[in-house]
Image (tube, rainbow, N blue to C red):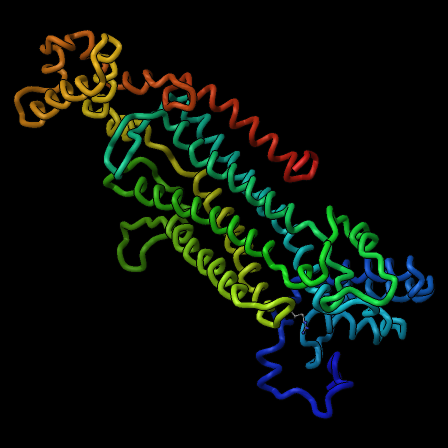
Length: 465
Ligand code: ARG
């Protein structure tokens, strides 16, 4: 069997080595990037006089054919194709003798790093677009909630705390996703660096021009140090972290939907298309998508941890351990994409039960802070106001009278203050910037819309990133 390195070896590779060593099953996902990288490399070699125009054209023609063959499934991979780089070069060389010159001034070490950068740059953009799409779903649900005046209890410690507009709650998740878009773009910026020309680790004695190959590939920057260029997988870790944080946010959204869909909360009803049944209990309707959003986050954390653990002990430069970068990266990209699409569908189709949310939020105790703030406006120190209201709450809970009756009878508060306890009143009072009342939420909505619009331009590369 002809390996890329058979010249130095008397015997062929052992079967067990091959089984462990081969990365083709997972790195063939990068075939387009590998071919794109070779096109750029060959053009650069021609520019610097190492390829004739004829050689360039025959290799470019062969690369086109290999791309078509892989795309259509016609390409026959052979046992010696240990990775996608080997497979493409082997096939190009079968198609044209000039193929044997294609690897001039290049190593798989700079080639693979470059391929992973290209695919990561592309797929980050795709994921960011899906995040934007999900943000627009959250915005649409927020708009519906704003229009209907829906509000619900805000929670701390999963205990009812203070009522907020439902639109506020939806946008809270939307802002977390905006940070995810920002992190993805940050990772994309650090990924967008060409490393072609670094060679195996030290550059080349040939007159290569790394800036030219970078230009052909539309990279924003070129490596500065060949050792670092082939040893660096920070951009994979950056991407995994951005994806994992996004996954954690999706998990938290999932967890809430699970709670909200219970009979105990009853805040939402899930659409049949986005829920599952039970094989045994006919009455069940289960929030599997939300549970998987929660479950998949664990897998993402695992990928990030795994990659960092793989990298932490590696001396410069390339070590074969680094072949372990691709499976976690690709799986994380796929996992996040699937989760985003499913949650997007689940959130856009669920039915909101505004009456149930209001009933939960209208517990008079949720307005206790507002009573205390009413006293503060009248000149009382907040700590004293807290104590006055706290005592009334305790007496109400002890069964002496309703909180409203006690408030009305209180010399500090009185019947005017008792109106704060009426349904739907407390939520209206939260007027500060970024707060949960209707006016503040309307204001926030404008900023959220502007944020999505600006991010759309950044993701598609139309704005400075
Ligand atoms: N399949 C390898 C990887 O994914 C390509 C680089 C191989 N380089 C080498 N020196 N053996 O990392």
